[in-house]
Length: 273
Image (cartoon, rainbow, N blue to C red; front, side, top):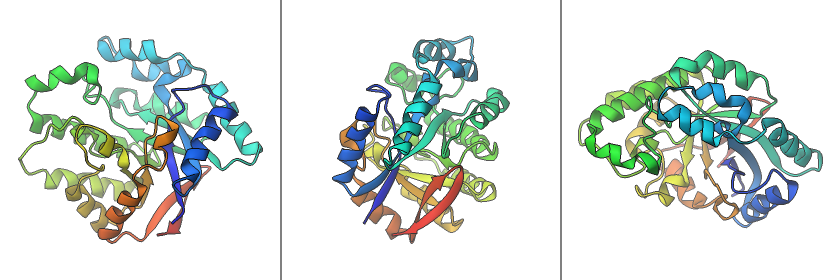
């Protein structure tokens, strides 16, 4: 089986052809024939305004926004010109109050696809180890509900082509026993109406939760609504490109999915599995 991996970050190295080739070489060992680079948008100085906050979120993003998006785009576009099998993507945190600014920002650049994700609930960076202690004082069920409400808004925004790691809220293993089936159905219904792709991410297998994103309970609803899917690694280092894709492939097949997505210039295409 030949794969594509569209959720790959360059952030641990420079924006150079040599660094990108490392990811391609490691991916080739796992039958990955194309790599989509999707750098975190918060790394770019031009995007600082998309996460403004008077609290810790704003301060965190100000500290992280050290790179030039033009340099990133130029490097990936040069890799394309050299015939390397790469795509230009970006991962963007959805912040409800800055929706219009985010929409305008991503429209300014020649991305092949835009990945949407939720990593913040207000000033709570729930999947960031720096905020881990805050979980002990939170109601897990209500936090899940809040997260999926924001995620549903992200889907409805029309900004994104792919929704990343749908239940990343579980990353540290905090789970609720209460029924979330109607919440999951609402997300799947919104994805159907928005005609958006769902990411099946192997990154959770490398996190404390030790599970693929999303859970089986969510997968049932994605299949019910016929949501298109893509398998991604969320690799931050070359050796993680295509990691555990064999497990992810069996996972999606057991729910009856028969195609995976790929993108070019914001248009979605399919290949059979």
